[in-house]
Amino acid sequence: MHALRTPDERFARLPDWPFAPRYATVVDADGTALRVHYVDEGPRDGAPVLLMHGEPSWSYLYRRVIPALTAKGHRVIAPDLIGFGRSDKPAARCDYTYERHVDWMGQWLAQMDLHDITLFCQDWGGLIGLRLVASSPEQFAGVVAANTGLPVGTGRTEGFMAWLNFSQAVPQMPIGMIVHGGTARDLSPAEIAAYDAPFPDESFKEGARQFPRLVPVTPEHASVAENQAAWAALERFDKPFLTAFSDGDSVTRGGEAVFQTRVPGAKCQPHVILQGAHFLQEDCPVEIVTIIEGMIQRRTKGFA
Image 1 (cartoon, rainbow, N blue to C red):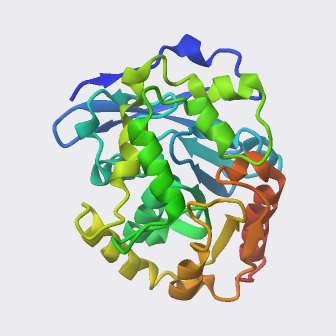
Image 2 (tube, rainbow, N blue to C red):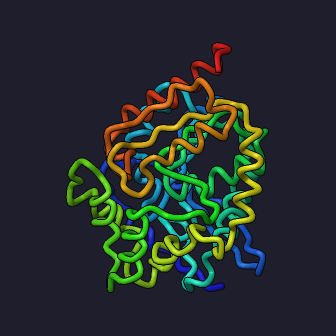
């Protein structure tokens, strides 16, 4: 496997991004070493909050959530998925598979040695993050799922099909404008440029191109069986599990219902529908912080 690495200067002077880069190394089954970038802010002994982004964004998505949570005394960790942000980017589309991503992020999480984690996951951050919860439920104290899913080959929304078709047909993938189009508020030109920063040219975007094709929305897709096994584990997950989907996302609208029905920990939780689009971290950062903080406070005070 050959991997590309975005030059550091692409990330200089990004707006509202003062966080020092940190790196870990994971090893693919073929022996290739890949560098994972992550943000790790706040007190080491604070309650750990894991923020996982999706496609085609990176941890920049959480720039207004991270400082608000650290100000409350929490340790906040936000990794970049392989293929995104400051993490390495395999150059061939065939090197991107769902199971590889779960393995890579599982290796990274094991190295972090975190316990009692509160996970906030959106988009592919949930497709991967919820697999980590299913495989190591003892590490997690609670989950907030937002505009995400864990599909098992039973169909897709019209919104997802529109995104899939666009992602495969567009000659040049306009990453920053895609994120801009998935928010309710207008991003500034500098913010749009920050989402473009990880991708100097089209050769760096193979992961962004491939991710929509990996979502297991038909029985023939890979990872259907693995996701079914993950659902079996989540159906035993009785720790707090809260949904915070938005009202303006055509891809995942209504997806909260399956979690509320099937995950025991979702019972009697204060589920919310937020006013925002797909990238609700851009539209609702204050609300997200309140939701995460509320889950941690209820847990520490002895309430589910």
